[in-house]
Length: 77
Image 1 (cartoon, rainbow, N blue to C red):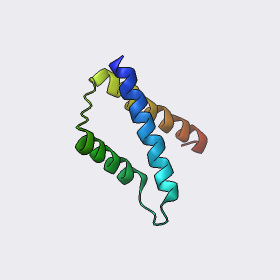
Image 2 (cartoon, rainbow, N blue to C red):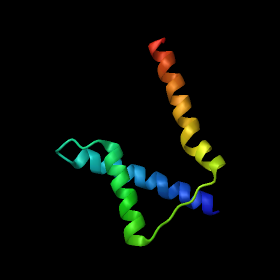
Image 3 (cartoon, helix red, strand yellow):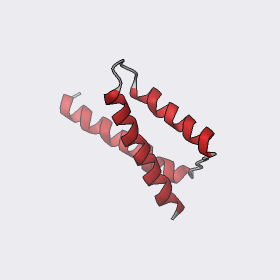
């Protein structure tokens, strides 16, 4: 159950960061906004997320690999 809650929280932070990115008139890179939100969550609420390596691979690395494969296929590299 904890893994599901962490996943939903991370997805919510990503959605909020995209809204903040669109609202800012100055172009700030999206990863900086996401890092700032992560720091704020950890400092204000004492939130500490520890992911097992398998969960990290499933949530982050696998989608990145799939995205790169799709991009390479579209660009025919």
